[in-house]
Length: 253
Ligand SMILES: O=C[C@H](O)COP(=O)(O)O
Image (cartoon, rainbow, N blue to C red):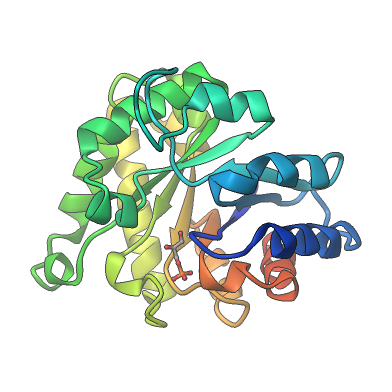
């Protein structure tokens, strides 16, 4: 049985004060961390304070991207080495917004994933198709190719530790969720891609999230599906009460 992992992606929302207030609210709540992994992926500028504010709690902190080099003249960037030094444990890599607005490619995603492991960070690797690709029945091919490119050269152990987030681009922030069955079908196709390359034992252990307009009202059905092991959540992770409902659904899945 794979342990569900619920990750909030705050994107470019919240001030430091709001982030600290959120952490305080969460700390007062009980979530059974043996049953669900809880992650907040926050803007880089207050990762440090959030790591300190959530120390000893059930919450882990993640970044939303990273540079693949350890250090260098890369203005505005943050490296995996720097993230680990802060006490960050997770990093989102290859989010469709990064691919669309910041020119991330399958190749750079693969480099970042490898660098994440070199720095003992758990990568949340995002893949997903556009609406046009879905309408042309290309979803599984596109997504499988993205997965293969992202995990190229990883060891079995690294792949087992990786989290893959299937996020259909047309479902992000739009209120349109893939049906639970459609999401499960694509997550199954991702697992089969891993199975082809790495075998049954590895494929059965990799956690695959769904992301795209996940909210308290639809998460239970999504998590009831065989191949969906958690969620990467944008909008519904911004309020503590909503995020806790998502975690409770994860713990009860
Ligand atoms: O990383 C999260 C996804 O982009 C989903 O965002 P959303 O839950 O606001 O649709």
